Image 1 (cartoon, rainbow, N blue to C red):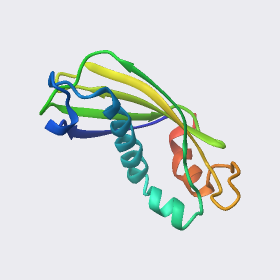
Image 2: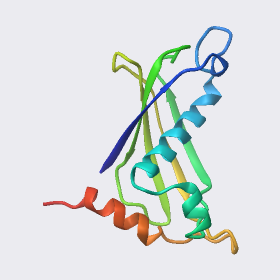
Image 3: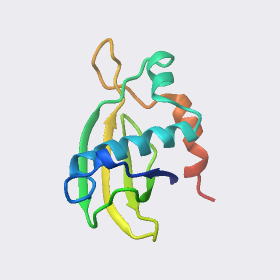
Image 4: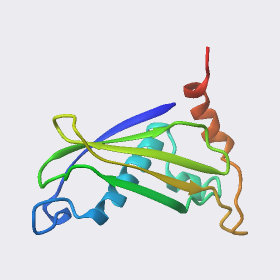
Length: 138
């Protein structure tokens, strides 16, 4: 299992009239978590697209709203991979407030795709090599 935490402060423009994060913005928070997790492994979407020839479209997303995130709150976006990816990668998401209370949870699945053919392809070996040590059992 591999898990990565990234902190982000809620901006005014991300909230609704009540001062709560607008529900549609959680998808963006999930993306921030995914991007920063991959960056923590030395991978970026740009590198995967330009150098490895891989696109990663979202194929499903589930969200549970437990407590509202509010304006100016520092939230922790925890992104976890519970299993090694194959032709898709599933990110498990949790957002916490400054007190460590769970605000939101969900998961996002993305497919590995060849942009030229539009066909699903296996996980790039370079990504698997970076993830493998976190999934080894002793």
